[in-house]
Length: 241
Image 1 (cartoon, helix red, strand yellow):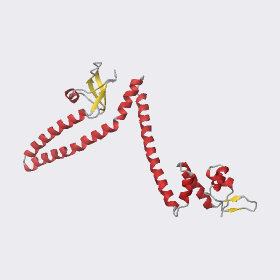
Image 2: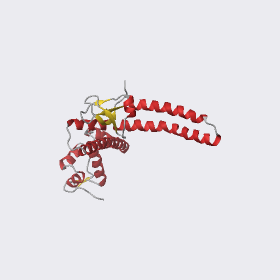
Image 3: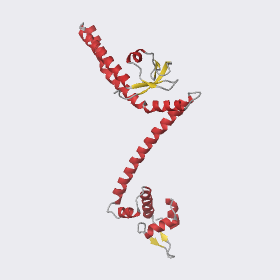
């Protein structure tokens, strides 16, 4: 069985010799034996215990609390629960950092595409990034609500061809028109647009927005502030009150 001196134990756990000696005086890490010369000698179990103590100290637990945990009948159960909680907290922290990293990358890529940029340009990109997930969820909701409408369309056409019954197709037309009006109003209540010229954030009329030429992320509109007519970037606008 391996035996470790105080110095060796400290080196393996990344602490100082004085720290190991202090834990001994506090009674939470007693050496397994003493050499003939009076030197402290620690076993593999002592090494494992010191690693546990170091972990608990990293979680900002005071030494009195650590001593109480180690005196439990089954300290491993308490320590396992603490590890699970720490793992959960770190996972949430990593996920948060990854989101921030992704935002930084999007901001960098957005700035790369501009020959010159200003504080207003950075602000525009930040606003676009902030509502990106909300826009994505809204678009998915629109797609999902449109699936039954599309299914009814194909059913009514096939039913008309096979059975010669036309009224399901008329029903689909009524449903499709109603759905189209509802989804258009819903969509344009939740979006706004940024003018790339003066950086004005505005909401166009439903008529102008509906008939405007557009891409998945921009729409050709007239800015009410500077009068520029061209593609304006679509952003999340929240619920219109």
